[in-house]
Length: 233
Ligand code: SAH
Image 1 (tube, protein in one colour):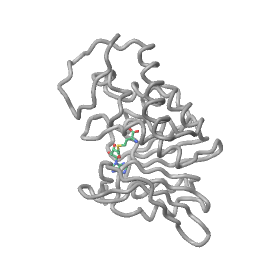
Image 2 (image 1 turned 120 degrees about the vertical axis):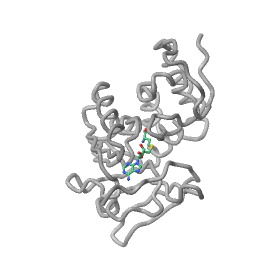
Image 3 (image 1 turned 90 degrees about the horizontal axis):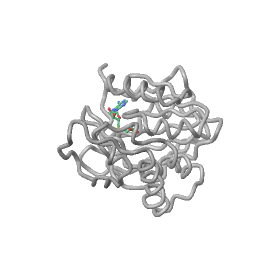
């Protein structure tokens, strides 16, 4: 049986590694759910089921497929990463997605988090500032049959006003402060999860709730995400 690789930031990879058989990937995915997600206390059955189903290996470079179910982020090109599976599961569980929800994601990256959400809600709108990443994620999501995800190349600080308001917003890159446009585009009663902090200093994952009397903020977990960069203009 093929041994799944370790958690190395960017080891030298053969240009075309041997393909990993589908049953090995399925087994690795279910082990990921047990050992990385259930073992760390996530119990929401919808989240566990979707993490056991979405093919994470389809969202990583072919040369990293054998590592797709390891307990770590992986490079996806353009200096960006696909988040650690546990972080995807944690943010999804905290967001508490409901079947009728319309959700905005900022930081499409590989499209994996969008795929996880797409299986749990009505519609996902996802924005990515690096255009080739947006294009690639859009093609991958389409190829894999995620018909309820819309991808836009653009600056997440502006949000997606034409599709607002959203029931929930998830930000998978770290701004230094909560972007005001995203607060505006959240429904009253809506939830937003995002890491806040500087690139080099501490970042904290926050759950925000929009109430009639303002935003309520709850710190959840220290994290390290790539920075949310400002677009031109
Ligand atoms: N959710 C992704 C991982 C995100 S990595 C996944 O499942 O693979 C964070 C992404 O945020 C990067 O691709 C980065 O280019 C993007 N990003 C950074 N600043 C942004 C901005 N202002 N607007 C939109 N996307 C941004």
